Length: 367
Image (cartoon, rainbow, N blue to C red; front, side):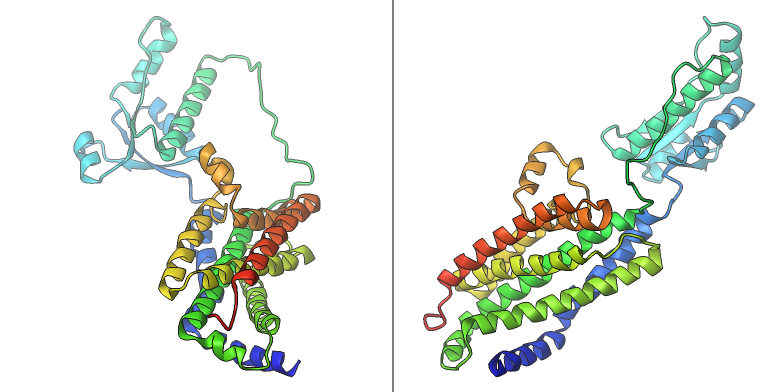
């Protein structure tokens, strides 16, 4: 026990004195929470839609008012005196709408004579972009609503909105927090352990440890304890920032802390495997980055996996961070304990596999 405590105390001092380690453990997750919270947690009025109204009549004013009230777009007026094409080019606009001269008159003529030409607005943009699709959906919705109102048609169909069973009033940040937690657990544990093992092996520190009385499992346990304590502290600090800065309501369940420990074990095992299997320290870190960075973006830390193309969804399902993120969301957001436990078993199973493989390759005397 004395050997374990001595090594634990020594490594805890080394870790807390590491500026990079403290940055990735505490500062980075808070920065991500603040950044993404500022971008997505508040209703920013939807997609900005520059509009040039060349008509100025009552129908065009009503159209713009209805469009702005959808919440999907935020109308920004382009002066009617501006040349539309030149304005788009000068301001590098990727989205714009123009209401032509005579729009209101065209509406009145169409109402009086069904054979008259329809009054139309023109939406300019790139159809492949999501902003264009949102603006197009809002514009089409307003057009249909105005057609319905002007024709004085009787409603036949409707849509009833209803929340999911057991759904709670969670915000975007409630769904984002588990991804930040999972990403932090992966980056701190994977990169930290890879660097430790590759450095110890490259500089011969393992051979020196072989001459001491400390045992291999004691040395590994101290690293796990330090990483786990730091990550639990990071979780609490990040959670408090989310609660007080963005009004998050997702709870920290006991299973959340179990996932922190399981994820820490998984990525420490993977980092140890990379560190002992790769002789060069720089190569080991490069490979860990090559493994870690794709997981950050594909495992659902920042964006829903359901929004990916099918082949990327398949790739994401083979990433261990996916199950850590999904498990955290299941227990914190959805309250689905059964699904969370399945994800936990996957995380533990993969962690045990990496740990056993790394222990086979790890030999202090040969390092």
